[in-house]
Amino acid sequence: MEARLSIAMIGTRGVPARYGGFETAVEEIGKRLAVSGHDVTVFCRGYDRDVREYLGMHLVHLPALRYKVAETLSHTSLSVLHRRARQADVALVFNAANAPLLPALRAAGVPIAVHVDGLEWQRSKWSGGGRRYYLVGERLAVRWADALIADAIGIKRYYLERYSVDSVFIPYGAPLITAPTEHRLAELDLAPGAYHLVVARFEPENHVHLALDGYVTGEVERPLVVVGTAPYAGEYIAGLRRKAAQHSGIRLVGGVWDQELLDALYAGCVSYVHGHSVGGTNPSLLRSMGAAAPALAYDVEFNREVLGECGHFWKDPRQLAGLLEAAERDPSACREMGRKAQERAAKTYTWDDVASRYERLCLDLHAGRRRHRRISSRHM
Image (cartoon, rainbow, N blue to C red):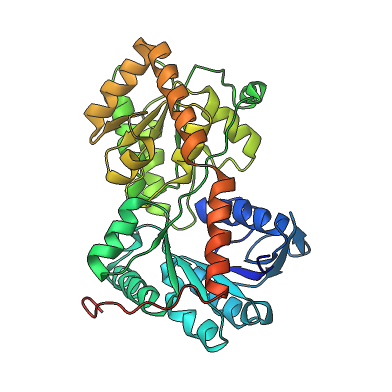
């Protein structure tokens, strides 16, 4: 019989999942590990501090500096020094930016797997210093982690080519939305099949500005509903608001944290415009697939890897404009593409399978079946 482990999940905002892909992954994986009998601790920041248990997971609330370059690292610094982390059988650390803090766990004898996320150093929000820091984080994750987790084949290939080191490929899961509560759309004065949708954190590499440009470039009749915000992107958000103010068809609705309403938005759209470019397997794209939303995705290898032949791709506003126009001319073809994407999600991206892979990795780390790898000194 396999051991039952104490597993620490470190480096995210925690649960309940209200923000992004890491938090969704922690919730979906953590609750399944707990059901399997493991003792799961999630380190949280900024949520209901009185909540100590959630879906079978123990929650530890610790503070963080509310400053873009320090928020994650300050919180993780406290997390890796906490008793429940240092006494864990295995630590799952999310985000390679946290890698400088791994020696605290290694000194306590805790095996570590680092989910390296996408290519953070390519994000436009980081200045030269920020980019250099993320590159250093990558190198230190390679040096100090016992295992690296890549959520996309493209990310796995990147670490192999740049650092001559292998990683464990474990994607995200896609929630299947087969009975959306479409009546919830009325809360936003919307109806099924009557709008296009963008869901994204407002950062330049997610190309929300290009989505807006494509919409106004084309002869598109239905409105473009844009869901999203960002904590540290005031200038970029101001630019999006200026664009939206110039076109009555663009509706910026802010963040939607109500998951039922968000699912209804995905399921009811004519098309889902996905502009993410550097984040590996993106949870928003998977969620659209699970809702059978026809995806028009920015043309990068990560999005092609996830969608396969079940989506359309664009590189500039003019291409996107043509796809939006085509979606309105032939909505039945669009719906069929969305249906095929949902079938692909149900077959390829299931949270049960994802959690099983994480469990196997944790058991291997605890049993010593995975050891810190000897790597090439190139790029180190």
